[in-house]
Length: 299
Image (cartoon, rainbow, N blue to C red; front, side, top):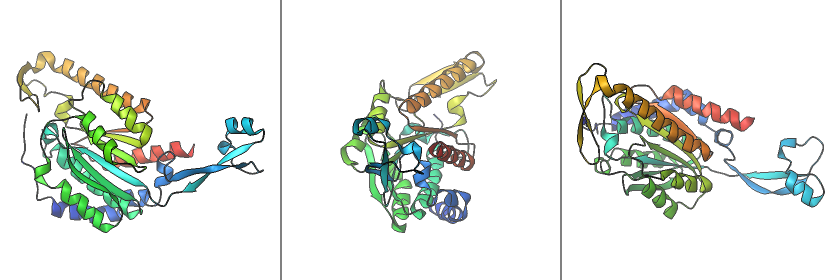
């Protein structure tokens, strides 16, 4: 596995990202609009009342109306803050690159940008970083100081590297995060255990969940006409010599099938899913994802 030294002179880069994010379309789009971006988010069910002419017909609860023998609509109260919790994979496979940027460096920039926008909107941000254990936990809170707390943890070299367990990450989350929240799981989703999706299903029943897959180009496709190529398991360090010309297409097809299955598992739990690649800027895909979520909410 090709390893690049983690760039922990990132603080100045993050400060620049802060300035850019504050002035960007990303911040302007997210600020104050989270309740329309995510389904049911920011609104708490308050009860029923009788339907009046001019009320939104989509709010009618027909089952409750049949029981009460009158037309009833649902009423909601707006919550003051949304809790957004980033659950980030920092295991060995996130230390891989075939470009000038490790997957984890790409994630640092992504999370720093989103954190700035979310905190500006008045919502709360929390952070968990995991391998096969939870290596960092910052409970959701609001305020500018949270931005620096999150960034300090993101650039802490001690947090990176180790085995990977999606199941344990979700179990840790279930053990301490009791608040209503939006969970953003960011990982390359390489090395998932058997039946991992059952834990995703449990999490999606408690919280709103979004999965963001971050992969390197080489995770998806081997170099063409490269002869023999060494593949290395990021966790066992086992090496395999592969003839690219012979197996390159099989590798590509296998990865496409794997990624489609992962996406399908998220969709089946009514969770959001976005796929990103480290040689492509995340700005436009993120913006497109949020806009699609907002349009779905408004339907």
